[in-house]
Amino acid sequence: MNRLITGGCLWLAVQGFALAGAVNFENVRLWAAPDHTRVVFDTSGAVTPKKVFLLQNPDRLVIDVPAAQASSAIEAASAAGLVTGVRAAKNNVSTLRIVLELKQSVKPRTFSLKPNDQYGHRLVVDLYEADTSSGVVKKTVVKKPVVKKSVADKTAALRDLVIAIDAGHGGDDPGARGSRGTKEKTVVLAIARELAELVRKEPGMRPVLIREGDYYIGLRQRINKARKHNADLFISIHADAFRDKRAHGSSVFVLSRRGASSEMGRWLANQENAADLAGGVSLDDKDDLLAEVLLDLSQSATIEASHEVAANMLGGLKRLGKTHKSTVQRAGFVVLKSPDIPSILVETAFISNPQEENKLRDKRHQKKLAQAMLTGIRDYFGNNPPPGTHMVARKYKVKPGDTLSEIAAVHRVSLASLRGYNSLKSDRLRVGDTLRIPPIRGS
Image (tube, rainbow, N blue to C red; front, side, top):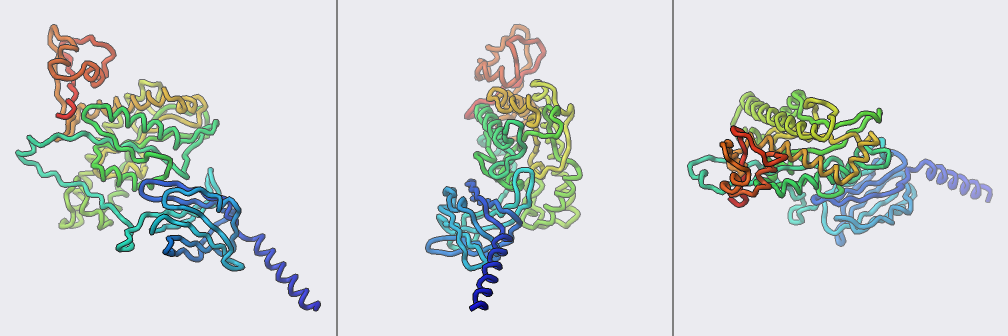
């Protein structure tokens, strides 16, 4: 009898020790993006799942985690995206089983994240819609079409300029935070939406929002989405932060040459991308040296165009106040690494500066930032209109006796669009000035 009691006490002691040393699943957050659903578990320590597998009828994803336990908050999670519910229970004495109830078949991807300034340990599960007929993820191959120019192209319908607008961070990645709790992901999305609305109203332009809501998109997925839409320009919008709260002002970045060199190697090594580089020139039948030269030419032209766009953008931002840097900066940001789309990153302000945080929260200032960016876009494409677009510039040199309203009438554009297209603050003209005539919608 004593032996039995001793054994029982030993068993309880072992269980108590195991419970005390178990990793706790403290909370769960779900984010629904257009192409996937992200599930993030906050854990008290590092987690390595023992098994991750799918079940059907109904569709479920099962995650077995050794030496773990779950709080009641796990099962209180609301449905989102592809996930209809979350359950957690002990599968056996030493293993916690988490079940994600699903709307349909998925392709899962799981990984762990170490603590950062915002969160502790996390287990992340990304769920992508699966092609049930083949069991693989539906995937859109990004192809930039080869444009074959001919005489017939002159009569072809003109297209709008495509401006890809990327609001940084999102979902479980809030970005920087201000002293009032302002999240970078929130204010940059608001600015991105303001810019998209301005671009939408601009004759000859069409916006594409890379992130339309509060969810995270991978950095290279952002590039791919811009390329899928054949974007003419990629603008990534952010808000800076620094330990010194006095730091202030906007900055504009383009890709550094070192970042370009590392990216070239990555693209050349990727056979899936090899046929889709250098502005649509297939590299399949080229030797390594020629492929590298072609990509280098494409990249160099893209970086040069990016720098010119960035300089115009910086000029527009300077009108709002002192910028953090007076010249265009260079860095190796991943979102700037597209080899065939001019790409810039705008740090709109320092969210760590209390005065600038207040401005970033102000709708009026958000609109001013968007307007400054639009001015930079206009200035660049007014001088560098891509062939085949409505933006192919029409120009008019002012003559004695001309008035702005008469010029607008002759060219069949509104006075407001002519004034705005040339960033004019008044209708006064000087003889010899050159006006850019905005494209006519539908032409």
